[in-house]
Length: 89
Image (tube, rainbow, N blue to C red):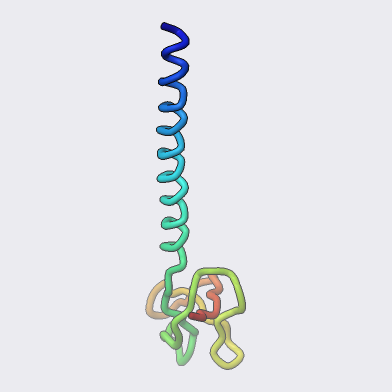
């Protein structure tokens, strides 16, 4: 009985684990793709936080407009501290 279980059950268990890990690793790569979101970039100009570019949250070259670094928006009169990055397709 024990050898019959090992001959049939062990390969079946290994096969099922392989399927589970294949799906688990596939889900992780999709989660990373969604983190590559494009966001609007803002600069403080004329007393307002104005949208000037489309940037990315993925680290890389800074998203700049002229000599100013694009940032996130807090409200109409304040741009955030978070620096945004250049978006390239």
